[in-house]
Length: 88
Figure (cartoon, rainbow, N blue to C red):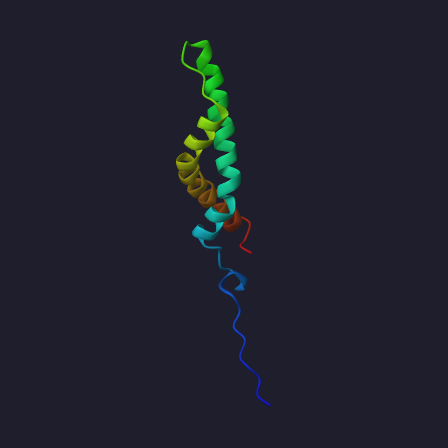
């Protein structure tokens, strides 16, 4: 009977940071929701200046592309916090 050599997954190697794409995909729904809420609130504040109101549906649709960029920034920030804390 032979033993198979088990390799550790890349995220489990000590001192190695998680990949930016994985963090971005993990954070995307939460960041996009936060962007949508902020856009909706910005639309409400815009009414005081005479702009048209931004509906919640429009805020969600606008948040999809903005959430992508914001999730990349959030993933970079979280990865830097992990690195500062000493890795995984």
